[in-house]
Image (spheres, one colour):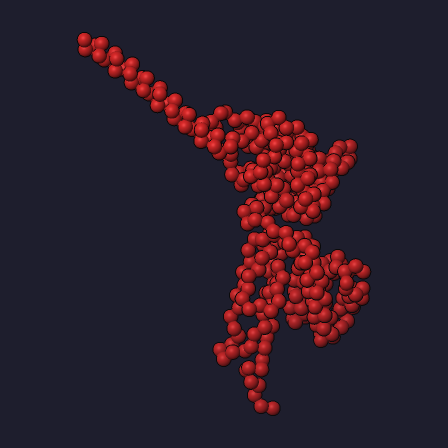
Length: 376
């Protein structure tokens, strides 16, 4: 047999990015196939080796259903890579766990897939790779339908970036507290929706949420917004012998209307234990507290803080249990009800400046008059 021409050799290369709810936008040149976690290229063997490939990922929103499917596709690629070195059996449990939601009767995938995977260890290497290749093809077909259904919603970069920062702070809080209770399922999606509401609230004129608003008004406005986002939201579900104000997907959301005074950073802490209690009863480690601050600032006060300064992670410690205390992360979001409009701040500033000039002028006259009398 003669030498093989370099031009006849093609190679498929796939890069699998680590799982992240936030970082779901992949950028790759000349890729033949990609998801929010994987990129695949096909390249020919050149004179000096293979072509250089490049991919990057950035923060972007992707709905929960296609996100989970992309995690399943990434897991199949991982099994394929490990099978090449004889270690695929080590990650079969993870593969089954990722595939199960997509292999029912309504998913469009054959029921025998899980059965085939159960016999995976008894197959020859070539048969295993055929099964995994066919599975990848079916999952990508399923993904096309999911992206048409869920891929239209967009979230601005500043909201996604803030949600990513808060999500990392929540993870750090739970890690410091050695928390074993999981965060709510789809917490990332719930957090995005609530921060999106906080941003829109700052820009729109919600007449119901003024300085005299009651808690019911906050309920109505927030619930209306969330339902408009097609979020799964339940109002005042019973938990134990108490009621959560809202249950957003699986995240308990406690709503409060309160005057947080001149020190809102400290004042908001007084509500965290109630939100944490509802999370504990739902057996999740995270809750959200939304407070409409009805404090009336002094006339001519300063502008409202930036959105990033109105969202904060609080740590709520439980009373002692038989194994010690529990930690719950409470994401606090403050909405200011009594903000001055920009033109009102401008008028106030001018008014103050004019008053100061008038006062200085009067003082100058008095001083000038007394000096004349002294000379005479």
